Length: 145
Image 1 (cartoon, rainbow, N blue to C red):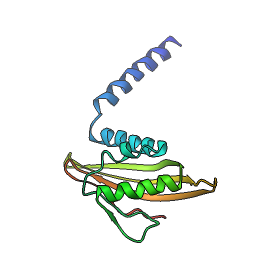
Image 2: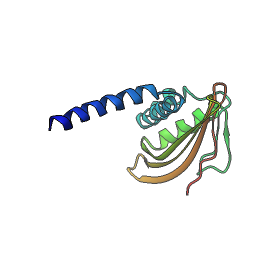
Image 3: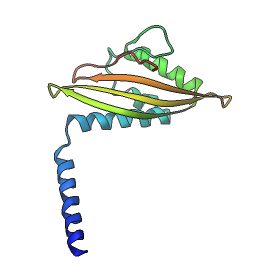
Image 4: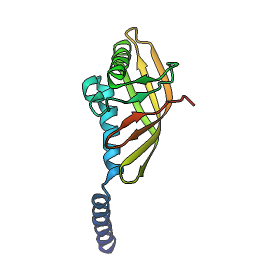
């Protein structure tokens, strides 16, 4: 039993050392995505929009055109949050790819539920990809599967 505990402690130190040594661009992007999800769920529009670039582009699945620019995105999400005061996003199957150590592409499915003021819930399953570079941050067209 003591031998087992010794190996378990050694293994946990190894895991802790490897996880702290591997923090880098992927982990930074994963944290950013978590912060975006949290601020969206909380309805904190200013915090949600803070990381977006001025030239960000978004093509939501329920709108037949692209929304271009941070101000236009802010207006779109303000309308969403006003129409659906309760909203929750649960990401699934997230992949993060880093190119050149500078450009990140995040692909994932979002299980989302939007509840309007009449307590009518609208569930959605959305596929989205996000690209982030040091000078450009944009969201590519989201597609419902």
